[in-house]
Image (tube, rainbow, N blue to C red; front, side, top):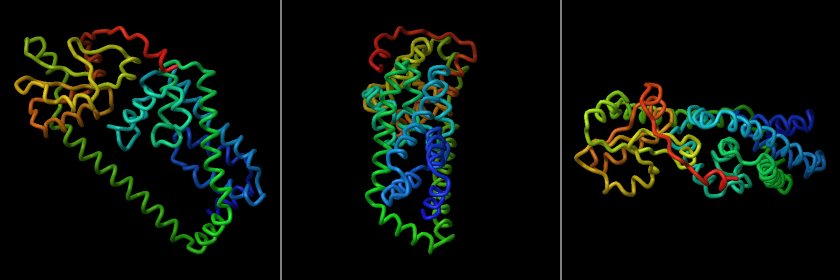
Amino acid sequence: MHATLDFLIHHGYWVLLGWVFLEQLGLPVPSLPVLLAAGALAGNGRMSFWASLLLVTLGALSADSAWFQLGRRKGIRVLQFLCKISLEPDSCVRRTEGIFAKQGARSLLLAKFIPGLGTVAPPLAGIFHMRARRFLLYDAAGSAIWGIVLLGTGYIFSSQIEKIAEQAERLGKWLGVVVVGILVAYIAYKYIARQRFLRELRIARISVQELKALIDGGEEVVVVDLRHALDFEADPEKIPGAFRMDSEELESKSDQLPRDHDVVLYCTCPNEATSAKTALLLRKQGIRKIRPLQGGLDAWRQSGYPVERVAVAGGQDAIR
């Protein structure tokens, strides 16, 4: 932290602007210590609190606007990209879509305080064509609230932060080794958990060719589209005969699934993460003939198989 304080003093406000901008773009450069340090310097009269807040808001708003435009132009593929680079592909997007679906633009006010939502909310707003003026208003307000809280915390506890910085300087490189070690251990744990999940997934999948053969052969197959309502509104096509049900709802109604017919689940997540996770959970509940569709809806389309388009009305107006 002491090095952060010195860095801010010597390089000024533009470091604050750039740092926040890069973090909100998704780079692994946490801005928390920088904002706390800037607040502490403001508390000691070495930086302006309001100038810092303005730059923090501008940095966050600029990055969020870029994600907003990507969401408008690229659609659901932006969320798929975010899911691919996440260490938790089964929940990186889905756990935030519910909040956005319920709160709409209001979710932008507190998005930066909720892990995952700060990155996902801006492209979601673009995907569902939220009015640009409304997005800018709410996102600017949310960025300002986030900046006030973090800078304000540094401001209020400026003397304590200075003492912490001095202690950290005494520890020197050993503190850095401990911090890096904890970070590496966390990433390794998540990576190992993900690889274990993918190994379980490979055993259970059904290919699109196998599913098409079952359907063409007149087999009784229950096909479930597990996409979130927001994903479905953005891309309202499904495999013919499939019905849409959220994974949480399906798990709660597992007693209604047939035990003597094949049940196939699909989504648009990388590695069929949502459908695979749901299938594995339901297998533990005794539903043995349930499998995720390899490649999901994208693989079905790429194979040239027919899709059914569903009329969706009213969803986007509610988001705006």
